[in-house]
Length: 79
Image (cartoon, rainbow, N blue to C red; front, side, top):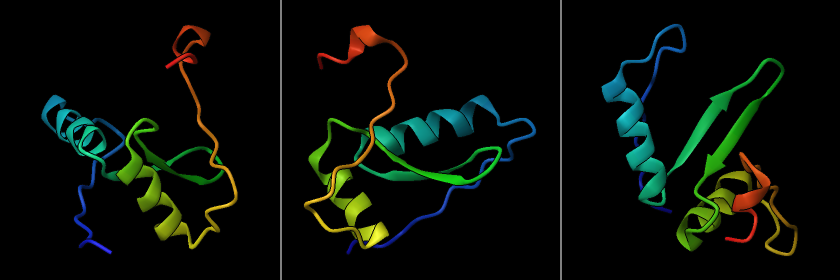
């Protein structure tokens, strides 16, 4: 597994620079741990094979089990 780098963004007010860096990490095949109201979500770019492999590795998940993909709008589902 590749080395893990950490970028911590203060959720009370992330700077535009920090948000841009987080987007670059995801676009480059990296993963992000996102806090929600009840749990943490492990996120990655759904169209990047290396990002999906990284999620399976992080989670120790069997490659035969699917991952959930959340989308912002039904129009992006075709991609």
